Image (cartoon, rainbow, N blue to C red; front, side, top):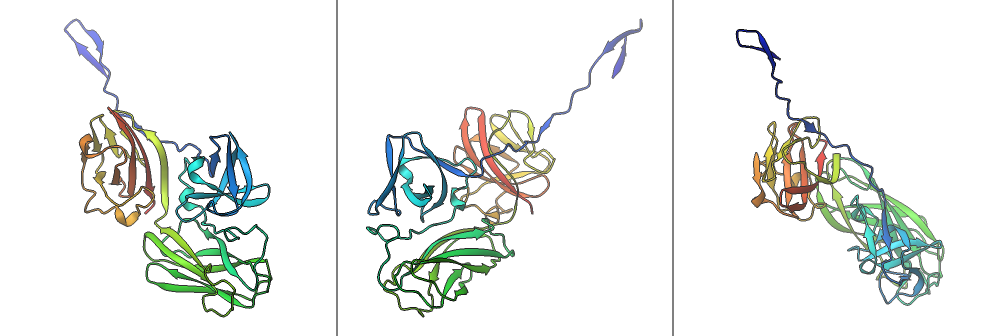
Length: 341
């Protein structure tokens, strides 16, 4: 812009204010696996999730491994060591999981009983579930999924036909699939298919030989616990981003959603926020982000703190959730995800 000042025709240039920039984050590549590192001289590897299982190997200081499964509760981690599936206690290693994938790893049961050397069979027939693979790892409401269930016969006698059943939640619906039989010491994959209609975190169980058609020497290891999450598809996920002070920030979709002033979160373009209390970050689902709670256009710093869970509705009307990773002075670091619908 040019402004004419004074009668003598002196020209003075006055620049127009620049619009406030809006930052749209570019998701940086994140590792697609969980790894562990040994922080001490040596750790023992075992044939199952417990100190009562045989020691089958060791890792030395500084060695790393990819985690391929966990026990229920993730207190023991499963790795592949020299071609064998082995277990290590989670509390004695350092776990690197920047993409929060640990909760999505399959729950694995050992293929041996405590005190039994891997490969040693027991008398008779003994069917057990070794592990499962959920596909897709994140179940979506109304979308079919499959469970590939690995069943092993730990006995010395071949098993005839049997079935695997799962109680599908919510609703207590039973889904089943069958196998024509399994030789002594052999394993096979039985595939179950199902669909859930709502979001949430559910705990259920799978049972091999659910109809008791096989006479087994050990009936105590037929049930396999399973926890899974059903949720809407994710449009965008960003981990550990520090919000710039005083700059409009776009969570997803192309329109600015908030400004962190250093003292409060201010919603932009009708974006709204609200503190929610629904457990851990990974446990919060689409339904927990209630539009009747997410109603604040301003969230002062005294309403949030490290570990707080904040539901939001973006300028485009999409639901999402953010976790306050750190709040120190005016420095705010968050992780968040935005649902696609």
